[in-house]
Length: 547
Ligand SMILES: NC(=O)c1ccc[n+]([C@@H]2O[C@H](COP(=O)([O-])OP(=O)(O)OC[C@H]3O[C@@H](n4cnc5c(N)ncnc54)[C@H](O)[C@@H]3O)[C@@H](O)[C@H]2O)c1
Image 1 (cartoon, rainbow, N blue to C red):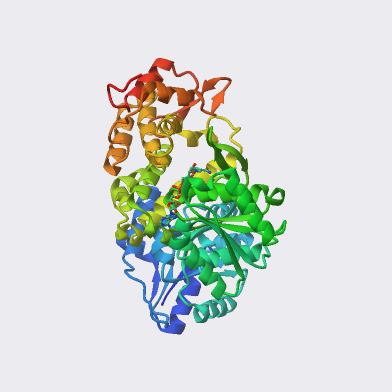
Image 2 (cartoon, rainbow, N blue to C red):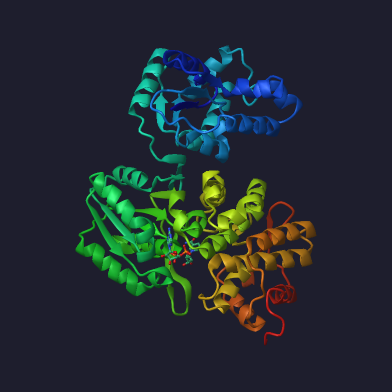
């Protein structure tokens, strides 16, 4: 096996790594030393004379050079990583998958003390109050270190640390790969591959549940739920399950009534959580069930579609449809834990995956350059369900970047009451997107497909107002083209589309607030003239459609 040591500067990764390697007569690899020999200069010089980005590129290459993991039980290599190596999702994918990753943790005061005595210059710490700098780094990086297999906490003497690492080595049975483990103001967020059952178990234990009450629907149940149920049962959990109808049919008040009665028959009590396993429709309905049954019970979201993993499971919006419109009855109710397992996405139909990328393009357009590049390179492979995009970590990175960006926006503005840089940003492409979706009768167009048309229309409005540079609009359009999204005009009448737009919920004092792309993000404008909107909508419609 490969033992990977991660943690903040000063946590003792090199010292522990060297001693551990000696004990096991295994090679010791200090990634920072490898980076220095690749670059032909010391790390502080790379930072000072080139940039952090150049350093990170060397770091990524040094990690790639580790090659495939060793899967034998004996310790084959010990690797000490630089403190920031795990910030990059792809590095984490390489370092945590099929390897024993050990987080050496410690109190910031102790780490700062060690750094003061260390001869090594740490570019991100130097010139600052070390305790403050270490605390800040700890807060920013905890979610990455937390995902490691083992955490060795607060052991001051190297001997004690070595013994604790030895115990982790003996206990290691190659568990599923965790990539991110974050405690946030809107619940715990855990991402990984193959983690669903173990993380649901952990979340249930945290909520002191005595059994696992799973709420799912036939499609998600076959693809993921039944396997999860079997693993939970094998782990000793009493398991119950309630199935709602498949697809949008789950989002009806009558279905929620039936499901609430099923929970009542199971004697589900006020503190007992339910586990929602399914896509966005199932999550919205089961979330609303959790929000209202006994005036609110805890719930665990286990999104099984790409749309749900990057968007709908995050943010606490739950609800059902009425014949008069979508999502008209609902509640804000945050899950206790969101478990995102990219392994369950393999069975999704291509159209579902492709449509979900409409939301990912939106998140990229909000200002994530790396996500943009990732979608430009790997988006078509992800849309086609290409196994290589799972194996390379590209799929997990798209889920993490899109999903985490939503977490941050929602934490800052949970109820969408905030300023222009708040939750309303997430509406990019959605005003006309919803109108196109409604014009299609919510059947012909998937949500993400409609967002694709909405994004093109938002670019057209932005260009007309002079806020979207033409090259930005072209780049967004070219990415949608590549992904096969919103490529042929829609067969609806412009009057119908504008009628649905007028009924949109997101009005400020009667005026629609438009989220429009800029060179590297978005602005919110409430002063878009009606004729500009009409031209942008018409641009997405087949010519000759009756008004
Ligand atoms: N709450 C929010 O913030 C929010 C945001 C965006 C969208 N939504 C809602 O999400 C819904 C759309 O999401 P969706 O497309 O995930 O809906 P969905 O739940 O209907 O799932 C789509 C289909 O995929 C199947 N499926 C689920 N998991 C699968 C798997 N792993 N393998 C194979 N098939 C699988 C389902 O059975 C279903 O037929 C809409 O109702 C929309 O309103 C909510």
